[in-house]
Image (cartoon, rainbow, N blue to C red):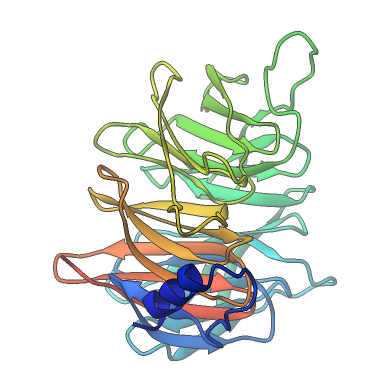
Length: 349
């Protein structure tokens, strides 16, 4: 295909920068690009509904664009009222309470947390947290939502009414790290323990919290996270982290001990440029999907063998956000690259 031909010519010529690149994204392996929708604002967050039928893209102009995934048809644009046009930093769908019902919670850099009914385009609830937010996640019981704030703090709120449950403060001591000392860009609840929460960001730490206690119960040093790039394996509870750096971009940590279990390389000898990751997500039992900048590429990787099973390369912009839904007969992924929303089929072996 075009991608392999490009690599072959590049290796034969061995002249950096003189081989023309394709003028459009190229998919190989298990990826098939179904649709590309160009928006008028940069996409910083995206999410699929639990059934995979709806995709929501959060943009830098504080709007959320909602599409059907089967044909990429536009359904709604969720536009909040009020001054300022600051980005939608994170989106989480609530589990559908009834057939055809879709609701999502979105965090905004402006400091607002909003609950939207996607089908009716109704803003059901709004809360001013008084500080900008970069990430959010909902626990397994759908009762609490955790927010990573620009004040280096983590706030936990009730999903029912957005009332405050607990605030995890920033680090206040020089001798003991009892919180974050820089911005938090990822929060992730444990897949089966409703009170356990993991956070990561610019301060090169992963911190594990019990949301009934004010300070972290464990800390892991060594990961530099700049986006929604932390996930927990529901079977082994291993922590998978995507780092924004050239060396060791993917790391796997033991949840109980904080021990580094392995590094996963995403390059090959013929690909000297390595993506610095903004986003990562586990996909079913065997796969993970990740994307980033520098080399603007989306990859799907086998968790066990570490083999790259598919790529979407030659993107004009970095991959800042992604999501994935795995079903028995098919799998789908969505991601944002610049102002382009991608709808992708992930083929089964």
